[in-house]
Length: 89
Image (cartoon, rainbow, N blue to C red; front, side):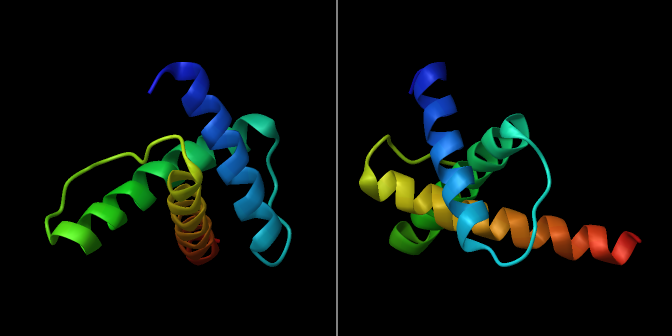
C-alpha cells in the first residue's frame, strides 16, 4: 500500500477509534494518524493470528474489512497507551 493510502487509513482508523473510546484523548491530527497506522499493524497482526494461527506482522488492505481491523487495532493501541502511561504517573 502506498504512503498516501497509509495516511488516509491511519487518519480514518485513528479518528474512529478516538470517537469510540470513552474519555478524552489528547493529540492532534499527527497523533491520530500515527495511532491509526500503529493500530492498523496491530489489527492486521491480530487478524493473521486469528485466521492462520501464526504470529506474523501484517497490515490490512485498504478496504472496509481492513478499516475495521485498523479501528480494532487502534482501540487496542489507545488502551495500551493509557494503561502504561497511567502507571507511569
